[in-house]
Amino acid sequence: MNPLLEKIALCVERGKVNMKSPYPPDLKGQEGADELAKRALDEGLSAKSILSEGLMVGMQKIGVKFRDNKVFVPDVLMAAKAMNAAMEHLKPYFASGEVQRKGTIIMGTVKGDLHDIGKKLVSMIFEGGGWEVIDLGVDVPAEKFLKALQERPTAAVGMSALLTTTMINMESIVREIKKTYPHVKVMVGGAPLTQDFAVKIGADAYSPDPQGALDYLNATLAA
Amino acid sequence: MKSLLEKLRDGKVLVSDGAWGTFLHEKGLKPGDCPELWNITRRADVLDIALRYIEAGADMIETNSFGGSRFKLEHFGLADKTVELNREAAAISREAAGPDRFVLGSIGPTGKMLMMGETTEEELGEVFAEQAVALEQGGADACCIETFSAIDEAVCAVKAARKNTRLEVICTFTFDRTVTGEYRTMMGVSPADMAAALVDAGAQIIGTNCGNGFERMIDIVKEIRAACPGMPVLVHANAGLPEVCDGRVRFPESPSYMAGMVPGLIRAGANIVGGCCGTTPAHIKEIRAAMRTNEAKRNLWHT
Image (cartoon, rainbow over all chains, first blue to last red):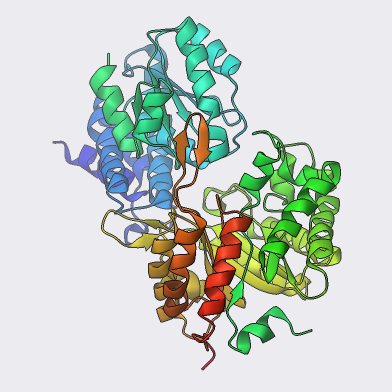
């Protein structure tokens, strides 16, 4: 593999955003994902290869480490920050259609629940896995999911809840979505959830960690 | 009357209260409602929760102010009521506790992350100070800064409470068990990391709350105790991980099961034992009873 792409992957995995960033300490003063992505484009590497052989490789590694409890939330957030810095340089190529995403997923924390971090984390892993994410935010009612699906009927839906009191709300939202869009895949996640609960409320998939959810998306829905 | 810290210094193991959030929902709080607003709109119901825990034998009760920071209340358009809602939260629990029991003003995380640049230490300090001061004005004896996972945010809260109030400051973190069997918060903080940072920031009682049930709390308390032999330790444990049954959420650990864990917890080094999500006055009553029979095992943490 191209050494520059390998380096980009490493910067994403380690959360090295740019030259200025003091984090992680052992890479201080070195180029980060930001500079390296720009250089890769200048050197004629394709946006597609930067995405799939650089950013996605780094995010996959951090996603697996997070699943295995080798790293924690701050490490994933820093990795995503590095990924986003590089992604900025790729934006024109997404806009022109030269680089395609695997598909779209609509994400939201369910009605009544204001917890953002878990859903954000999963969204970042999805983006890093080559998916387009539409983040509807927190406290999202069924109508909002339906409206987003109206615009993107081929998208999948990811739903999060942190509270035992709000996970119950998932059931009616899943029902509403399935009523209008029976083929849309709905994934659920969040601290108090279980596979058993996901099955009971009619969701298509559950994962205790973001990487598992990405694996499901890639296996069942990737274009 | 002796302060909470003085009582602990005498070697007494004390009983705290059980869940508020799940109790409020039982009384009709809807998901998406602001629990703290009930301090003025459903005062009698909130007071009833406090009274039920006092009747169950708790030496101290918390306040209905977990999400009472300005940042959290903003979501409900209630930021301008921050002082009133917190003051009232403490006043309600004070009314239930009377002069002989302690009131711990509950302070939860703000939901904003310092490392992502969503807020600053200065701003967090002001937000926590505002809440702690209002809880003190309402009559709290201590504040319980709880369910934290990030050291930077917790340190801001502890320092703000110490600097701006005379409240005794408790701070507890929520730990998960990793696949390799270690305990870490979602931010990667170990019980020992937490203990060192909180003691340094000026916390007077440290501990753990929420989590996966009573049994694992024993391991966590041992780790905290090993890191900080000289600090009093508080445990507010969940009644296990919630299960969904017929569209209702239930917590698996019964009052007698939890009470059975009390001797182990005390041996591990806990000085205050109470409940978190899913625990009820019945749990606290049994914990109280278990404590009585274990009174001989006084926990002389200061020696």
